[in-house]
Amino acid sequence: MRKNRLRELIKNGLPTIGTRVLSMWPGIVEIIGHTGKIDYVEFLGQYASWDLHDLDNLARATELFPMSSMMKVDQEPRGFIAQRAVGSGIQNILFTDIRTVEDAKECVGIVKPETPELQGIHGCHMRRDVGYVLDAGSPEYVKAMDDAVIAIMIEKKGAIDKLEEVLSVKGIDMVQFGPADYALSIGLPGQWSHPEVKGAQLKTIKKAVEKGIRPRVELTGKESQKQIQEYIDLGVRDFSLPSDVVILYEWLKENAGNLKKILSKI
Image (cartoon, rainbow, N blue to C red; front, side, top):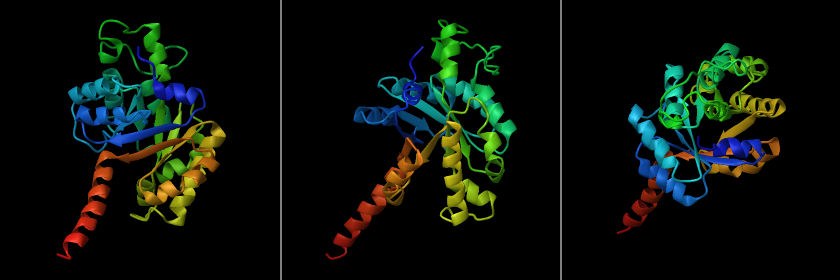
């Protein structure tokens, strides 16, 4: 079983840098790997079009480099998607749309192996991550499943209302606040910078640090990047860079706009 770089960094108390992709072209993952700067690639399966063969190929591309991988899965059917993602070789899972303590417990159980000690619901399988016929149900398989980083999105009013209880669920390793969904859930659609939304993010980060859970922050623009030191001072050690489509959009908008200004003078 392959070592999980993200788990190793967390275990050693080191910071992590991830980036996110919607493209299922393995070449994008290879380009990211060639930078030598990224610890793990997160596939935004919640937003992209994909099939099970794509997951295998994305995992294969990641394994060419000293990187780990993660998949952001839909709220339904999260059990099927998460277990097939792990079986493909994607080592870590980000669960969306957590509203209750029961949601959080379910997500942890989906990933953890079904042993008396870990009490998950993830059974044996003959999939790519275990070499199909090599480590199915072995002690190495159990360790790999237990090493999977389980991350959850805190992005609903229900999760914020019960934040203490949700973040007390054993097995959660990382949380990320989702301002867009949270603003929507409290009747402030599109108001990501509203004080109530910002307050919920701060509450999430502080409570996660208190509970020994890693809060992750997504850096979506130039303004958020200016706040990196503020997040570090709060205890944040995990950052995610924008997705491929956001990077492409922002680069084209800025540079095509500058070019148009120059050309308009002709």
